[in-house]
Image 1 (cartoon, rainbow, N blue to C red):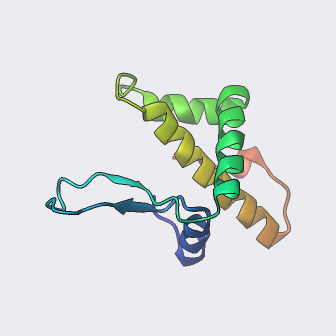
Image 2 (tube, helix red, strand yellow; image 1 turned 45 degrees about the horizontal axis):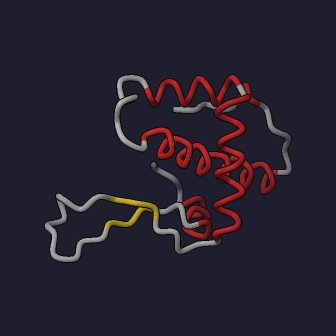
Image 3 (cartoon, rainbow, N blue to C red; image 1 turned 135 degrees about the vertical axis):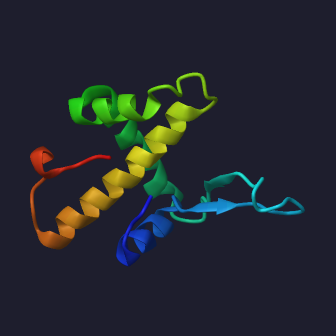
Length: 111
């Protein structure tokens, strides 16, 4: 995910930033995982919101299906995609609050 500086700090605050444990492993073999160093309650709430969004809201259902295409058999992929959706929801909410705007799905471009 490519986010600007403020968005990256926000993601780090929630503990959604990626880190890879490299104890004794070459960096190419290290598997990145979310750090979980941030606010666990915020992370939980965002993941729950992502669960609802990816099951009830057509925009996020399409996004999830797009990300899952061809990867359905990969272990834990649904949870990874929902974590990515949770990150996006956090950035969307922060941007809306910062700019004093209402949510408009037509302006949202999920890629």
